[in-house]
Image (cartoon, rainbow, N blue to C red; front, side, top):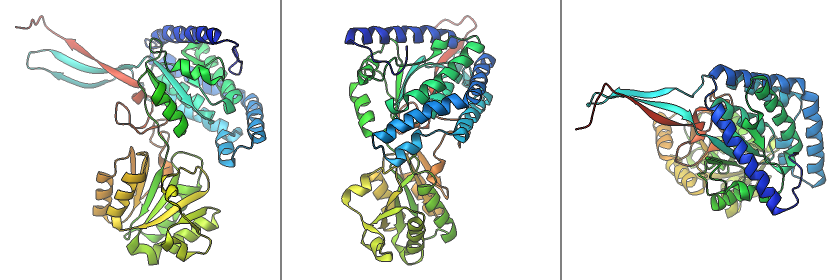
Length: 428
C-alpha cells in the first residue's frame, strides 16, 4: 500500500492501522533477538541501496519540492525538504556510521554484588515498537529507521505529507537492507496514508506502540501531547540562544554568532536570539550585528541594537519567543551572565543554548544555571546534532526530563532490565 494512498473509510483505516501495529509488534520480537552483526549488515545494505538508487530518490524529491513550491512554501522549509546527491550521500554515510557504532543491546551498564550475595546486572534492552512522527525532512526517515534498527526496535514512521514521496523512496532502501540481512521488512513501516486521521489512530495504539517520538513544530507537539495514550519523548521547538559575554574574544564571538544563525537557518539548532552583555555593547555589538546583516540576516533588535545600525528592525515582545527557522535573528543587550540566564530561562525552549566567553567562572555559572538539554561554551549551537556528538545520527533533540534528553541516538532508544544471579539464596 502506498504511503500516499487515501483509505476511504474510517473503519478501513482503523483496520489497516491495526494490521500495521500487529506486524510491527511481531517483527520487533524477532528484531530484539537479532545478533548485532545482522543488524549492522542490514543498515550497511540500506546505505548501499540508497547510493544505488540516488537517481530515484532525487526524482521523488523533485516531485515533493515542486508540490511544496506550488503551495507557496517558505524557502527555509524547502531547504529542509530538498535532497540532492550530496545530501543523499550524507544520508548513506550516516547509516554507515550507525552500523559501525557499538550495539547498545545487551550492554551491561552497571554490575554489583548485593550484601545478600546476589550478583546483579543492569542490561540494556530494546524498548519494543517506536512510533515516530516528523515533518518535512526526509533524511529523518533514514536516521530514525536505522537508529531504531540498531537498538533492536521496530518502528512505525509518519513523515510529513510534503515529503511523502522522498520518504517512501528512502524507506524502500531500508526495507531492502532488512531483507538482505534476513530480517522482516515490517521492522520498519510507514503509515499507509497521509490522512491526518491516521495520526490520531496511531496515538491511541498503546497495545502495539511503546513510545511516541514527535519531531516538529509547536502544533504537532501540542497535538501529540494532548491526544497520545502512549508515553512521549518530547522534542520541542529549538528556540536557541547564543550569549556573548563581555569577556568573549571578539574574533571568536563574530565567527560563532554568524555560524550559529546562518550556517543552516532551518534546523532546530540554529540560534534564534543573540544576547550581548551590556558591558560589551561598545566593543562587540556593532561588529557582530554588522556581520549578520552583511550575511543576509534580518536583525530585529532592542533600542540599543537599533542604534548601532540603521538596518536593524525594531523587535517586538513576540520576537523573544519566536523560532524563525529563517535568516532572521532577535538581538538584545542583557546585564551580564545573570541577565542572559534570566532571559533564556524565561523565553527558551530547553533545547540548546551557548555562551561565548574567556571567563571560566561566567561559563560555569551559565552551564550550571541554564536548564537546557544541550549547553555549549565557545561553540556554535549548530553542533546540537547527534551526528556531531558521535552518535551517527539522531531522531531528534529531546527537551523533556524523563528517560532521554538531548540528542536521541541508539542508546537512548533502549530501556533496561535487571539480571540477578544467585547461588541458592532464599530470603529470610
